[in-house]
Image (cartoon, rainbow, N blue to C red; front, side, top):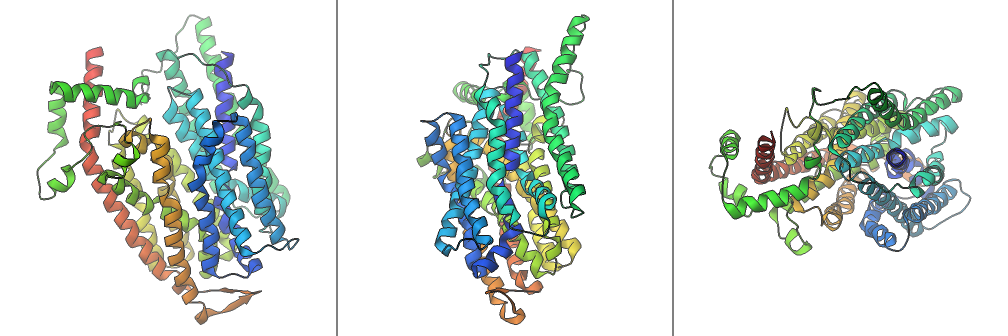
Length: 565
């Protein structure tokens, strides 16, 4: 029981780490001031945002570090990288030191790399301590990375709402403080034995409760996250947010106590009759079962009555695009793909295109949110927009776990959910192109945050299912190379359009120029909207090509359950 309790303390620790280490999401809160202090153009400012995203390319170094150092050492190495990178930028913002542009660029690169190291530590902790409920643990912790901007906005308002450079100071010290607080649970990792099925279901119930609590946290931050009231009220609101982050420690204890109480009075606790189907242990060990069952299917060439029924229900039809859908498509899920095979797959490049034209555009949008708000005369609402993006990104990440919970009532391939998640992005950008008022800006920001958050959280599971669980580390790192590439391309596009309109609305702020008016980003929104439509089309084609593999897995799962019962 003590070991089981400690694993939940580790989960809460990873939630804290994720919640306070998404430091790249508040870039737009201080980017305008940084641009002014450095006296740089919008294109040069964009390169700094790209540098932060480029740090993800070096995420593999965290895996290398884990080969030689324990987890807690890697955690603190990440903390001190962030302290050094953001701390020096804060000194530049306060005019205490002067650094050339190239060194600031390298500091942004180091800061981005530190975020990847934090993520690696969290992923490893979840995988080690929740082998049966791994997807639920990962989706929950990844979700909290989306609330970082809202939490930092609350903290900034509580300390000094009039200063934007406070965000750099918070970025430097809060991850280090969080690492210190999380140290004891990480050092005292339990040695866990395999869980019986009833214990897996109990853990799934705890995850469900934690997700509901996470939704409450997201709503709280959405409502109060951008409050710019007096310092005392802002501190109370920050205290409430921290309390919501601490409260999950109580949930496992309550569930364990309830179970003990029912055992004591000779009553059994059953969750089989609930209105939803929690993910079964066999489904959570998805990939092993996929490989063995599908291999058996292809070897025997047999088709059960359930498969025939499913095939009829799936409604697969021949058509003019049949060759495009069926040619060299995945025969089964979970098949391991080495790098050489991965890059030769059309399915991978469709997935890559969907990601770079969906989630990555959303990330670039958040990086430019400060300048977008400023150009539309909404500078005073920048923190509100940042909180809005952060909160809806958080909700999107939480929604990525929904397919696992509603599987019994509504089954779709995970690539179908990816396609649905991409729909809000083109709507948001075309809405921004059509109208530049405050309401349109807020609605579009929420839609982009929701869409990109889902994609970021679902990507690991999709990569694992399509291209193999054992190769997911390498393959996912190849996938996310689209982030710095997309950040560079989309950011430069936005910056060039922005700078081209500066002359018609010139305002001098120290040594930098500011563009004012809808024309500053109009063409950018149109281009981003068109590209996101391309991403949606790629995702739809990916779904059509992978639907057969997902259907076959579901057929085998239903057949297996029928044989058991």
